[in-house]
Image (tube, rainbow, N blue to C red):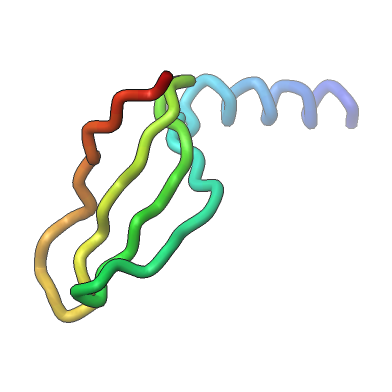
Length: 64
């Protein structure tokens, strides 16, 4: 049973999503700013309001 669980976790880790969302804040226009990481790098995403057909976009931030 433990071998099956280990193999399943290994497969999920190898093919899983590398984007992690940590927190969010509202934007003035009804969208959301979302902080997290993508491929081990810190990122901020801007996600438009629900009635928009646009996807979330990466916001360029200079981290110091």
